[in-house]
Length: 410
Ligand code: C2E
Ligand code: CA
Ligand code: CA
Image 1: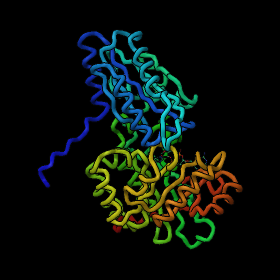
Image 2 (image 1 turned 90 degrees about the vertical axis):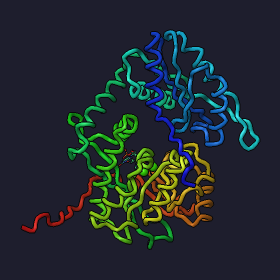
Image 3 (image 1 turned 120 degrees about the vertical axis):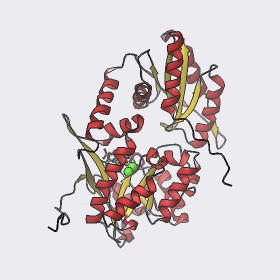
Image 4 (image 1 turned 45 degrees about the vertical axis):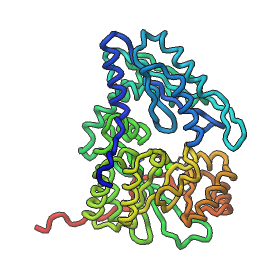
């Protein structure tokens, strides 16, 4: 079995770098299109997304490339003779995405959400991908359509690039803190352990306390996430040692890249052990994206973390492409239903479905983003095991001052 060749996929940024270099040779340009198909206002599920990928594959020009990206796809297009050459490419992508799709026999309308970034000669691959990603975000926020980021780095990209540099200076310089948000047991389950989720904040050199939605995506795209992840892990373990026990858990978010890091299992073990914290009290939150990577190594890593005694929570369930079946593919200790299924309107059908599958699997459910007493009451009636959200408590710095362990015995 040892001689099976494992082919590691070439990272997206490298492929984009190749396209830019290729374009430089003959004075043409490269572009990145980040796209998803939106069905009923959400990203297409796993099955539908695969169909969309097949369709995109068929409309690509020679030399263009298709790669999975977040909940959708990225098209890397090179050899473009200027901006005008891009529009037929974009049109074909939109047309491919917007054919009705059949899932469970019912044809469903698909709305294309496409973010386009056209590179120029001096562009680096990270900023091109950041640009397409930003544009896709803007398109999603409008409910779909094509958004284009003009070349020469729009204001948004330069802001993100500044963040990249500032992050470099901040990582390793004690400029991150963890806020804690309570996760409470509901209904009959008052004897269940209580928990907290730790949520990272960055003490930005100029802007003060900055939330993770601004810096985690930058760190993920630029390759800074593994170093940042270690620092956040260390902070989480320090809190774990102070606050958690068999009757309380602490949940830490892991980015998909962290799980592809060969060292992650030993890093986590080492940090937890060096803080003398109980392993079973640390929960690692992973996202659906992780379940969709066709990478046996990631699954093996999750298996090892679970076997080592850590808990694995599936985060943000109900936002993206993963199906209920995918819940069975990795060892899970809880499913967190995304806040968009709770607020502003409770999605009864979806929640009932998740509760029923989770019950069959014997794992608890956690509702995120609970904002009103009515929602809380409904969640109890639906048989949800835990709740988290502003109604219960917003994330805040660890309030109770904890005694630092004696540093020097001298
Ligand atoms: P998440 O894991 O889904 O975390 C929950 C987010 O919902 C938090 O945002 C939290 O402040 C917010 N929230 C809590 N209750 C409510 C509510 O009732 N209503 C609404 N609308 N929102 C609520 P935050 O702290 O800004 O974190 C955003 C995301 O950043 C997190 O989403 C997580 O994906 C990521 N993140 C945070 N900390 C870390 C970390 O240490 N490592 C990694 N890799 N990602 C992190
Ligand atoms: Ca989370
Ligand atoms: Ca979440």
